Each structure stands twice: as C-alpha cells, then as structure tokens.
Image (tube, rainbow, N blue to C red; front, top):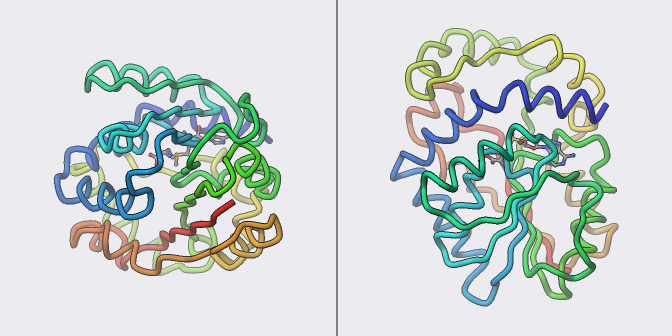
Length: 246
Ligand SMILES: C[S@@+](CC[C@H](N)C(=O)[O-])C[C@H]1O[C@@H](n2cnc3c(N)ncnc32)[C@H](O)[C@@H]1O
C-alpha cells in the first residue's frame, strides 16, 4: 500500500509542484496561509516539522515567518523538487525522505508539527498521529490541515460533473491537468479517509491519544479560497484545520 502511495505521489510530483506554485504566486492566498500560521504558532515556536512537505510550500511559508523548518516526505521525487524550489527561492530548509508514520527524530524534538493535505493519504492515521505526538515537546502544537475530499468525491455526481466542466480553468490557472488515474482509484478504495467522517474522526483520534485543547477552525476555506477557487469546485471546499496541544 505504501509503495503504491509513494509511486502515486512521485508520478504526480511535477504536476503538483505547478499547482502549489500558483498558490505561492498568489499574494492573496499566500498571505492568508501566512496569517493562519502566524495566529497559530506565534513567536515562541522555533523548530517546526512539516510532515508530507511535497514541493515545500508550507515549509517555505514557515521559514519566511522566521521558523527553523524540517520537511519530510515519502517521495524522493517530491524532496528533489522541494530542494530545487528552496535553492531557487533562497530558503534554508532541511528536507529529508522519510515516512510520516515512522520518523527518524528523537522524542520531543519539535515545538510544532504541521501537515497540510497529508493525513488523508496515509494508511494508518492513528500510527501517524501517535508518531507526531512522540516528536512534539510537551506543550507543543499539532496542526492538521486536511480535507474531506474522498467522502464527497464518492458521494456526489454533481461535483464530478462540475469538476469536469471546470477542468479548463484548472489547466490554465494552475498549469496542471486535473486527472484521476487508475492508481488513484485503487488507493482511494483502500484509504481510511474514504469511509470516515472528518474532521470528527480526526478529533476522536487526537483526544484518544491524549492531545489537549483539540479544536477545529471552521473558517479555513473562506480564509484561504478565492472566488476563482470557488468556481473551480462549485463550493467553498472541504478543507478543515484541527489543532491539538501535547
Ligand atoms: C497532497 S500532497 C501535500 C503536500 C504539501 N503538504 C502541501 O500542502 O503542498 C501529499 C504529500 O504527502 C506525501 N506523503 C504521502 N504518504 C506519506 C508518508 N507515509 N510519509 C510522508 N509523506 C507522505 C506525498 O508524497 C505528498 O508529497
């Protein structure tokens, strides 16, 4: 399963990079994400782990906010792109190939652990969040930004039609082809996130692991999405943000 997931993301690395670059180049989207992390991490947080960093967009935002950032990803191709982006943009981020469910770091080594659009694509969310808690220092913050995409994908024919019609806008604005491969379908059938109610189940997992102050930000979509994003999806999106304190 993990090999399939690695292959899926490696094959999509260049495409996904173009898509995140369009967010990076949008002043509005970038400043929305910056203000979210500023609000959540403040100035005390110094060392941050970005799990499933992909092309490094979130890691670079955090570095711009003055944090020392380590970014890990299962896909070597994603890490190659992240390193290339860091060089081009002039950021000093430590990127490593590593598995989110089995991290190569000591206990209590980070002030915060963040991950965006990653938990849905992991086989074992409980193992992953347990591991993220292990590497957090006591009092450290976990930030999960994810979406209920698979649930809606499976359940709404209208959304599929809308996406099909909006594909040309995605191709022009994000310079990527929004395709679903057979590999995507295979993986999605097996992933926990396809059958679970989120963020409700995320909250249950964090509470079971003993995280304190578990909270959901209900306004994340409107804070980060533009009218154009709304048109591409046909609604404000399924993204949610959950935080917890160790
Ligand atoms: C949708 S991308 C998100 C990338 C980045 N966080 C962002 O917001 O732009 C999901 C990323 O998770 C990575 N990933 C999937 N399974 C992983 C695992 N077990 N350990 C680490 N990274 C993983 C993929 O390689 C991919 O780069």
